[in-house]
Image 1 (cartoon, helix red, strand yellow):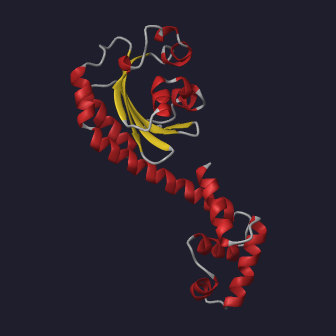
Image 2: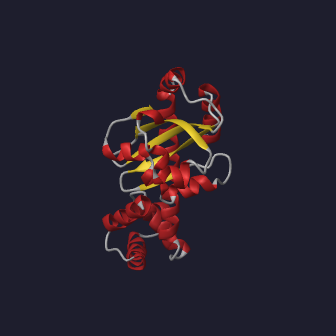
Length: 223
């Protein structure tokens, strides 16, 4: 999905490359490698993003925005650590970046990039990127939803990894909101047996209730 979107968006705005990803207010970044592993993306996500003027704008406001680099950089941009350590060596020349808030902590971003040797983005390019803003938000919302589903699935597997197969089934039902009676019916066991399995699940996972179990899963997903 990311690859199809960035390919079409790159043609629309006349970009050498389009990137999509997510910023979080608790200081993290995730760029989607839609064309295979990209070391520049990994370097960016490892910490360089903190120096990016677009991330700094995101961190300072709750408003969505779509801006050219010229709106944020100052005359000393080429002397900045961000330019010296990342932007210049990556052969980047100019960009338009849109940031769309998706929830209290997270925003999706799209970056239209031109390499050295290409002309800077103009008003027409910005207008085209802005016209595609609604579709861009929808794509970012869908990608964010898919990432959260993936992370939740991973969290559930982590939670179930130290359990027996039967206990793993019990844990899955608990995470999905089941109780002793509904689990007993679903697995064709007695409510007493279901309660005993639930106690074992809680003991092995270091929690004392279904509320604590769900809270622990949310923490894993959030991390």
